[in-house]
Amino acid sequence: MRRSSRTSAPALQAVAGLERPPRAPIVTVYTKADLGTPRPGVLAVSATRREGLDALLAALREPLPEGPFHYDPDELATQPMRFFAAEFIREAAFEQLHEELPYSVACEIDEFREGAEPVYIRAVLYVERDSQKGIVIGEGGRTIKALGAAARAKIEALLGQRVFLDLHVKVLPKWRRNEPALKRLGYATS
Image 1 (tube, rainbow, N blue to C red):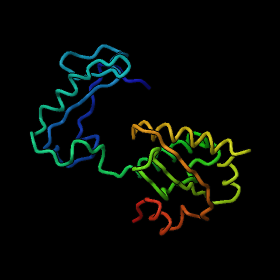
Image 2 (tube, one colour; image 1 turned 30 degrees about the vertical axis):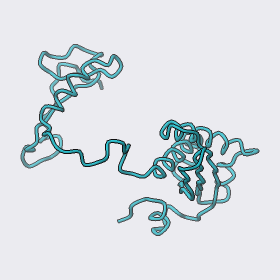
Image 3 (cartoon, rainbow, N blue to C red; image 1 turned 90 degrees about the vertical axis):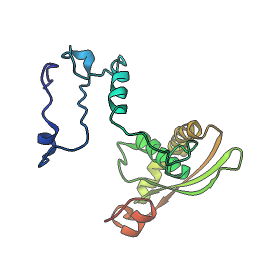
Image 4 (tube, rainbow, N blue to C red; image 1 turned 180 degrees about the horizontal axis):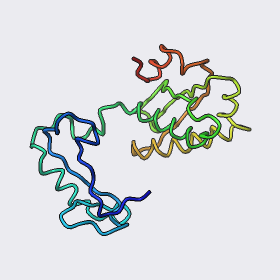
């Protein structure tokens, strides 16, 4: 059921089940402003028409205090690049294999040589069974080649340089239920 643009959002305290209102300023934003006429004085954005984004950024910037930078401005993220490479490979695997192996694929970067031209990355895709290994490789290696090409394009865009992506597929039985394997593959366990 679609809400009317004239319907007000419930209070954050009620929606979040908080005992008392938060001390931090609250900015309420209505999305999909292109589907209706928002009330005057309401912060509304439309991603499809890119409307209201400047007002949203101004509203978010206003209550934030000035402070020192905590990270080098040249750093893209707090995670190492090998983390992003593994995530791009996993993402490509999900895009290629989402119906056959939705969550049975994990990726580990074995080697990442940034000083080389092209950047050399050797990665292993782990599956739980031999039959899944065949699915990832595909007939004549077609699936893993397509997966590698998609992942390489994303990694090259991030790094801004050419990448040689060396992909391998290995079976790691029941890795999703094995705490040491989950930890090794970067999944937090409690």
